[in-house]
Image 1 (cartoon, rainbow, N blue to C red):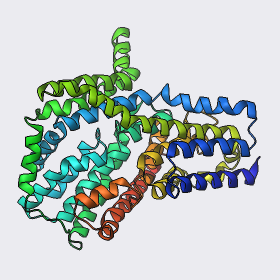
Image 2 (cartoon, rainbow, N blue to C red):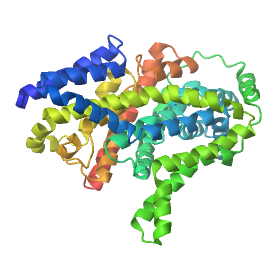
Image 3 (cartoon, rainbow, N blue to C red):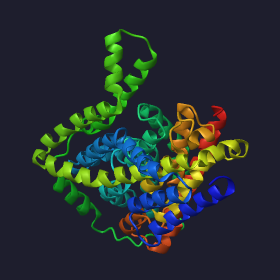
Length: 457
């Protein structure tokens, strides 16, 4: 199958996949794998090569980014269970001060969600938000949106959150995560500015139904539950160490030094090694909080959390491999002039459609990244779009992240976490959380487009 029928078949396959996940509640892994197999049969891939195509796409994730996802998730759970995430929140709050509660909540959320899922992050930090709301008399809705926006930005843009890590690996940047982190920080800034002003605006127009008479007691009860918290530096080190090692590795790969030192720095800068070092920095937190015996249970919970992400990521890679084998990319390459006008907006639109239809940002990120393929492969969608450098690949990861936040509504678990813990009705949730994620997604892709023009991607 070639030409327009191939394009129509691809579009139908994507629509069927979205409907099966969102409407019929079929698990994303089964849906993506099933659609991949059906698509392979329909477009005429030879029967004898289909198993190899599926196996190649599936196994590539386990040989690349799978272990990185597990390590990042494990670090995040240790920070959550030991109360280190709360210590980070308190430290930022002291620096920013009570005069800027919205900014404090946004920065706290942005930092906490780098290693912790945004859903868990909101639950962890929410008692601080409620306590701060009572102390400063600030709008509950404004603080809720500021916290939700801060958490969401790092959740979709900055490794070691599993979604961005997976996307980076799938487009060929598994050994250049520092570039993705830097791009994520840069894109987060305009995105957070937009969220900040939206939170201030909507906080004056929507009132929360939240009752906060027991806020102080709730926060104190939470602290009592965790017991003695680790220090701020000890809590920050598991996040800071991998970033520093990856930075050193990146510098060593381009700056000539002693051979042994170069090799050592490059070795330490590999994401698996850097995150392992971060994990080694996190384990003492368990000893400090007398929770060393919980390491087994935390590891077990990590595998339960990371497992679905890895398998969905692998399924997305299978779909991408099928698309390559079907000749879709070759067709796109012959129409590169038309696609060049779409450019960076192509992955954004795909991810936004997937996000809005099935709810999960991680599924949207990994599926879209699987469709885009490796920037270094001449048979990938990335190559067809002219995204053939590490910097352009990083911008594609950012565009995917921007689409994966557009928008959060009733089919998204984060929507219900924010509305329920923020004391908002579903109707008010659409006016606040849904609208804010729309504003954030649009501001992010505009910023990414501007960056692409500046750097001439």
